Image (cartoon, rainbow, N blue to C red; front, side):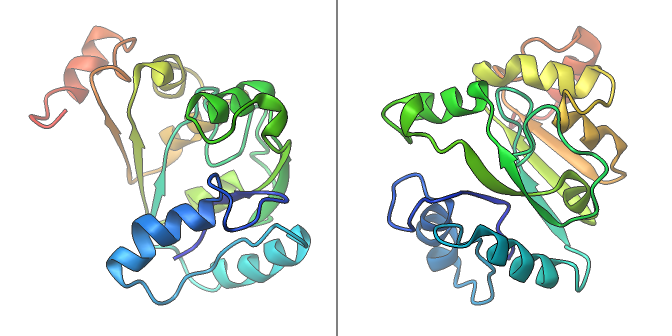
Length: 193
């Protein structure tokens, strides 16, 4: 299991640590024994290099991703770098992304949200054999619309999923609310939507 992204400077015991989240909600519950965390608390560059070497050894079977309120993919905020071959990169989190983290309750204020993170690059994500993208909540409806119906552009990072031959998007009614009726009808045909 490979870690998609992590804040720079956040310890593993911080409530917003993705390492903590993955350990508590996935790894310990499933018994996953081989995982590669991005420990970006002290030396993000070393973490990127170490995990980057591992993730490029073989194709990733499936990537589990979401779409941010600003259409970010992992922490690739707009404008995302669609060209780099680096598996991981340091990214600057934009204000909408940082506001989202506060809105989700991970931080008390925008000033508390780190401005830097390490993220799996867009090109590394799309190298996965399959991508499952799960996007609930109405606050992501505009980003979903832009990612699904708009052009593939770095200003809409998740739009890159349109180019993947085996990407599946899971939406709830609220996140699908702004899609064109024909697209929305196709998506909402599932009885579980």
